[in-house]
Length: 264
Ligand code: NDP
Image 1 (cartoon, rainbow, N blue to C red):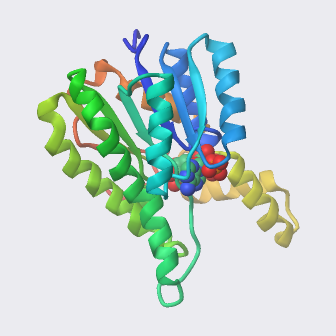
Image 2 (cartoon, rainbow, N blue to C red):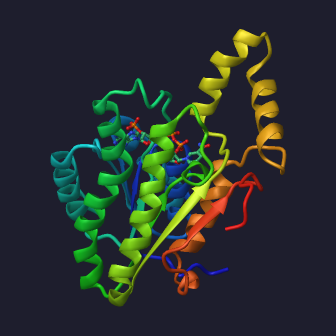
């Protein structure tokens, strides 16, 4: 399928590894120039260079902690100076948590609120004027199955991802008149390097391999019986980003191998 994305410009937060990297690569494969935000600017630059060499598009890694408004402001200047504008914004940076509501500090709640919600708000506010100028654009959020079906060890993650889904819905209503589509993707288990790290630690306690730990987890949670690869999730993002998905507005799509236990 021709995704009709050649020559367009994408900004992907958390694009240096995992789902964000796979999305950046998939969009580049479709001919888009890509800017990648991550705190570790060196890793972002390395991956951006690899993308440039592999796919022949312009690609830039930019250091940005998306929880910090001043970082976003500075990084957006770099976006304008490099890829020039943004047609597709992917608000993807995020991470899991572990706490109880009774014990978590206000600071921890605030950090995750800034990471999962305020970053998407601030970046949308920065990109929407650019999109309006070119009469359209797409904003994609990476939420999580946990926005609907909580994992009880991470209440802060569940709560902030649920808020992100609602933010996307409200924003979609506000900007569709300007030709800007806002859509959310809610993955289930996606096998990123971080999962290997976690499994490496937890499996040792049980005397099993990381692979056996991950396999058991997948079979327990996902009816499909396995993790998704970042690449197969990324193909979904490319479709959502494409004009081929032109009637998709304000939706939150599960991509979870059947893990969600209710109908949407
Ligand atoms: P990874 O941990 O593999 O990658 C996270 C990315 O976000 C990295 O590029 C990291 O770079 C960046 N990042 C983290 N914090 C910040 C910050 N404060 N500012 C800027 N960049 C930041 O994550 P995944 O690929 O697993 O997850 C990506 C998204 O998908 C997240 O929002 C996650 O919640 C969601 N998700 C993941 C699932 C999974 O199973 N993997 C399932 C459901 C949802 P750096 O450290 O250099 O900043």
